[in-house]
Image (cartoon, rainbow, N blue to C red; front, side):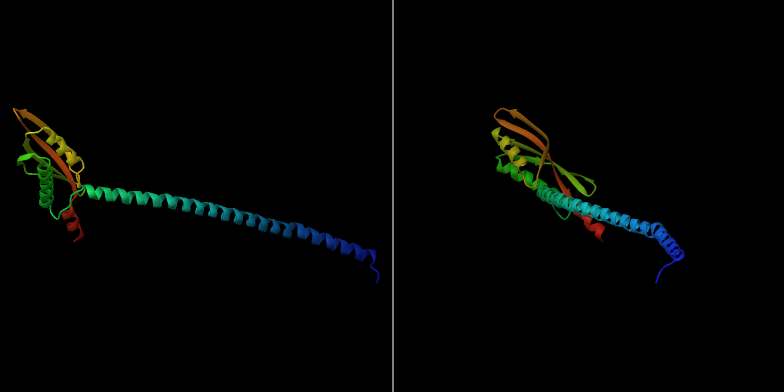
Length: 187
């Protein structure tokens, strides 16, 4: 069977129309699929990068949490505890008097403790007067206060000499969390 030239021209025209259809429809669709695939690959790469940063940050945050827990434990050893403010004040007075006796100081008197509260924290100030025959006892006393657990911080200190005896006064502060406020808030 032979194809006439007219049929051949019709077939060529049909092929040209099909080619134009392919050029206007199929090629852009393939291009869109390719562009979409490129965008998906970029999204996956960004997600991988974000996950890697999160992993790195989680390690840094874990280290920070451990550091914060260590600091919290250190602070907890430096603060006083008690169920009521008078008990905390009594603990501070007892610690101060004990350090004085251990250092060879004689306690003359202690004043009533003063407490200041801010943001569920208490700062308790305790004043004590003392005397001793040896000035080195006061140095020992101050070293004991510096190393005390819970921590007593010296706010004011004075020492006077009269003949063979030294007399002085000291004001220390101790800190505590106000547990009575915390218990009241929970109820």
